[in-house]
Length: 469
Image (cartoon, rainbow, N blue to C red):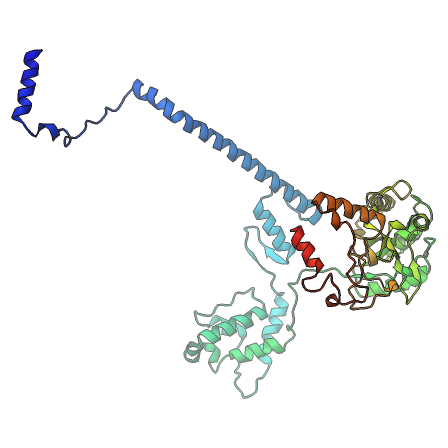
């Protein structure tokens, strides 16, 4: 051991640079494992990546199932509510084709889509009239529109299915962009053919002006007057109705709009529905093969200062209102608006054990049951629901019977006890209990916004909005 140590020491003394030479020598690369050793080492490093790939595959499958479920519901809705004749295994191509056909386009079996062409007879008459008409100045020479189009320059192409209105736009565009080419080589400017100006003039002045052949069909309905059925649900003038329907049918009208009034159908007793007058009316309409759009009217008809109420709310509801006037909208002075029920009782059982929503629902269910045969025939093709004053779901802040005149801002109608309770509950949830009162600086029915402390610029209305946000 001693000799070996001395030899190593003497060698270092002979090579003074040996202390730093190892810093510049390349480091040996680790051996690459092969066979079973490589497999064992790679198992730990790739195990995590394999699990991630499996999880991503599962997520992809879930996304695909979710997408297919959404597509299935969309197709079912289009079939049920849009009357689209989609095949059982429809895809988005079938949906696009159905939408194109609904818009009045032609879709071939191979997917080619284009606007509907004019009938050949119309195109023929258009060509003949263009040739026979004589322009001023003697610029027209005997030729046909077909020859003009066949001899056109390569820059101008007119498809056989293009309507005359489309030809107009093509000619204008080509003439504006390549006018100098037409002056030299285009046969349109030759002495043997129609000039472009004359062709466009014929199009504008001819029978094809305002041609709406490609417009989708739009059904037209006429609303019948409200007073044709009295408060006892009896049809007032059947023969007069027939005469009116004869006139409507002669105008090629598709159908009529009929109001079904809550104050008539359930006018005297709760949950006692009388449909006899409407049944008789619908039978007469059926004779003329007209469709019906029904409006379920849960408000009062008329009742302004200029006229008496034609149709009021049901009498049993008005009787409840005598003892509990808070079922109606109420202004700051305590005046009640009996045009419709307050939204505050939508979920309050104050109508002989029923809420406002339940009352509306029960009448509509009775209507659906009574006229099930007309629904099955497709005679009743739409039902609208009228709520609120004048049948509109709006805040009834401007009532003429309260003295409102245009353009007054109206008054808040939130002072019945049910809406006040709702306001207090909402204010408490927000943490602002002092909001639980109606404004006292919002003016009167005929005030202007700038005259009030609530609606004026930087008024308390703005402050409330800022605090709430």
